[in-house]
Length: 300
Length: 177
Image (cartoon, rainbow over the protein chains, first blue to last red):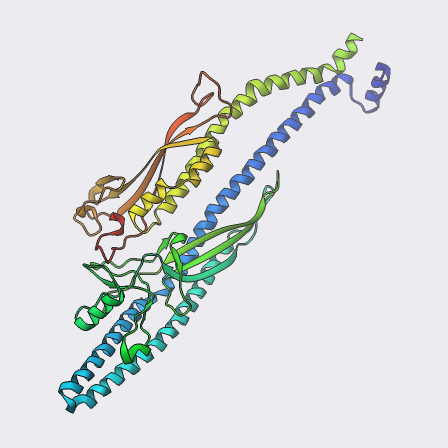
């Protein structure tokens, strides 16, 4: 392009050649600044994902803790465990007394039989109540989890130019027990026959301070073997120290059968997130939280 | 002809040279040094998250085992240019009158510092520390820490211990097992 021609164009657009030359530096500088700003926003996007993950983990723990606290509300699991153990003791002792009466005191054998029947019926009734408690505790914990989740989920949705965070989803909720935690029921050494039977069957754990193992059906032998005595896992009160509900490592969650009383809640949250600028990074962020219920109080 | 080149093309050619000078002597050194605080924040974040996870263990021995066998965090930091060494774990117990007891590794806590003891301990804080060699983006020798060679700093994170129960079998606090 000739000089005359360029001057003519410059006059036409009312820009002198000198101004145009200086303006090009400004334009290129602006491009450079825009590029740097974009790089900064990409950095913010990825930093934001890390922040959101920490936040989601805290929410998962909080939701799991709400469910776990509900499981053993009013020490219902602890009391049920103790009642099951006492009922078992009663049946065992009733059977022994009946056998003794038949051998030595036939006159009171009928009375001993009546007592045994009563203990037997109580054990059946208690097992029904235990099953009902299982349904109630799980269902109330579920409601508590859902309620806490509804409380926290509203604070997440955020649509920024460099990052999009949607509302989290409650992907899963499970009840179980904590690995390594046995029952809150102290071993009953008062009935020597039952004590040796339990040790022989491996229903207890520990030597100096034995406790009943959790999640075993501690069936009796002989005619009473039809009865179920299921003692569940729950942290025990020791030296007047009752363990409070607490967050645990999700890896310490242990699944249990649907008929067993649970003492741990585990929840899984999903959070759909994506970056706004830069290479696309998006999907469902996932966090798992687990919490254990309050420990069982001492036997009244 | 010379006047024409000077008036319209000089800006472009000078800008390219200026850009090279700017990138070589300003941006590159800035990015080289600027990556150090970013890596520091990443390392601190990973360490804090690890500490929060470790305190959820059932027993202190499990916490120590979890911390010493933790490979994921180390490999993540290594990929991000942070070399981790000299990992230590301890417990700080705060008692009455702001008295403080530091426990190193798996050492047992004295009975007076346990919950219900004479020192009325109220806070049990698990502390982890590591030496991190945080590298700049470009490394050359001779090394100038932070500029051309990694800068070594001690990073710490702490979190309150979660499990205050007593093991019914051993009758010991889980924090002391």
